[in-house]
Amino acid sequence: QVQLVESGGGLVQAGASLTLSCAASGRTFSGDLMAWFRQAPGKERELVGVNSANGGSTSYAGSVKGRFTISRDNAKNTMYLQMNSLKPDDTAVYYCAAVYRRGQYAYWGQGTQVTISS
Image (cartoon, rainbow, N blue to C red; front, side, top):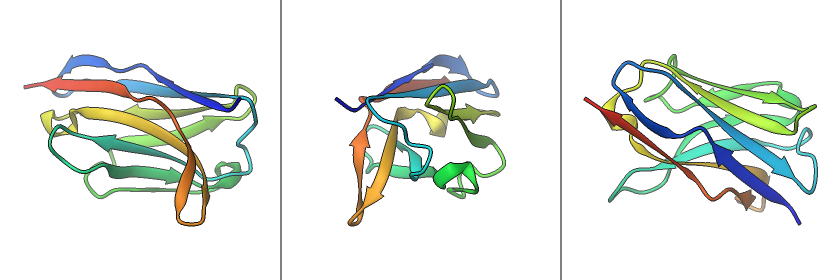
């Protein structure tokens, strides 16, 4: 059974940093696209960033570019989201996703809550 499990969320003050982890099991994803999404209360889910297969390149939403960094440790089958200079607008449930096929991601984690206080 393929699973993605996010962790590392929490409540921090504005300006702080957090690192989220997305641990995969059941298969490896080193050759697949992986991504982070987030969904704030009352808002649609938005793409935070996408990491290409084999970690070759990464693209970010404009709202997080320069503050967030996606990385992978293929030996641990884990993807990370390093978040710096956090703002209250970053408050959301953060999800990881993997394997982009036919216009959607095949695998999703359950999400981890990130709350930024002002």
